[in-house]
Length: 333
Ligand code: ASP
Image 1 (cartoon, rainbow, N blue to C red):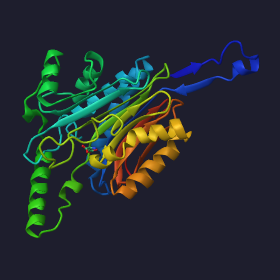
Image 2 (image 1 turned 90 degrees about the vertical axis):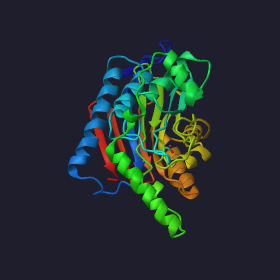
Image 3 (image 1 turned 120 degrees about the horizontal axis):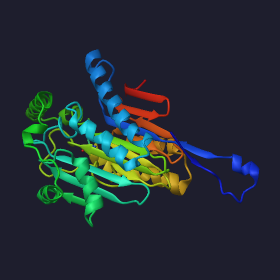
Image 4 (image 1 turned 60 degrees about the vertical axis):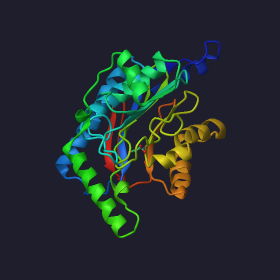
């Protein structure tokens, strides 16, 4: 389905023919990191790709039906939160104390309204709560017990903390703890959190009315310390959307993404610097993030339907659906 703008009727007939149209589009990611080819078996790869594909279809169906970019983003993210494969909702990574603490945010490119929630331990779908914070409260961000109290009043689904736990993540947590201890014994810095920290999910969408939205949801980083909050729920770092420039969802080493305000910087370079989303993304991911020592990636979507999925890590779970075009990928191809 295509949204079509007829250039003002007062224009010359030739201009009337010059229709600007942007295809409805959804772009998603399922985390970036040390995803070298061969890291997963073909069966595992298929499972990841099937879920990415399902999330794309679900989000795209919303757009095709004339639904909003916000609804498409929320729909795609919920599907990935509910999947045990990704580090968001069920399947989230563990904190140093062996808990799951979830963060999410969403932004509406039309109104520039935004909502975020962090440090959640019982809310089944953090992205839903982020949206409720945006639409049903006067605030942008809520954390911990207060955020969950608000979620309860909003009638959201609650689960026991054990709902988020998967055996794979628990094993990764135990491995990471072991590596950390070994490194401490040898008095060197552990690379364990680095190996296991990614898997966040995110989406950006462009709807038939020409509106952009973006959202991100995560369990954060393995072995994160009590109360640590990453970039995913920080508007301007992990998520940003503005119809005047672009929609971005990020994944990677959150501390760097916060310091560099990655999502906002990409859109600001487009808005103030007149750059294409590709040029802005290259600068932020391959120059600024790279030089700072951080790693990860972004999905970026522009109002004209052009998009970028880029990263400076080995790989990033990602996908796009736009008209007949549908792609999902994991590694650098
Ligand atoms: N950015 C997330 C965080 O730092 C982690 C990730 O993207 O996997 O919490």
